[in-house]
Image 1 (cartoon, rainbow, N blue to C red):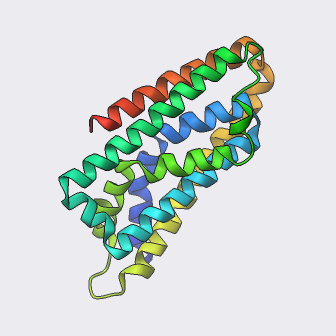
Image 2: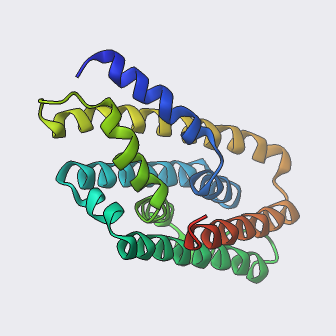
Length: 205
């Protein structure tokens, strides 16, 4: 694989990464209701999700999912249900916590990592990227696995760079906006956004 192929793939995934979606929403919600560390954990979980998609693509499982209508539908519904559950949980945590202190205790610790990981693993858009975009940057006649490893490494760098930057900016702004009412309001906004993303994903739109 040539360096310009990696650069081309990197340029292709940058706009996809910068588009606000589930990961950005989770990072925002976690930093506001917790700390920058919580947002970092979401970012790391999301990056690990990319590694799963890359591994599936390398062994052909992504092709199996994309070639089967029912399998792709199942992935979309599963991902949508998970996001709706996250959204409802986030909304309810704001209602239960009048001080706006954040999500319930069971979401502490590595909860952000798990959320980022599963939200990415069950995201059919990520499956599509590694089935339709990645093959365009592979060199025929060469081993596929090392090439996919190089491309996913570039993708992880872009993703982590963006999400960690967002976590830092939101954490810095939190010092100015850190009030119970603001945290409660942002939890509700995040909950609505996650539910909306989940419904959209489940409907395949």
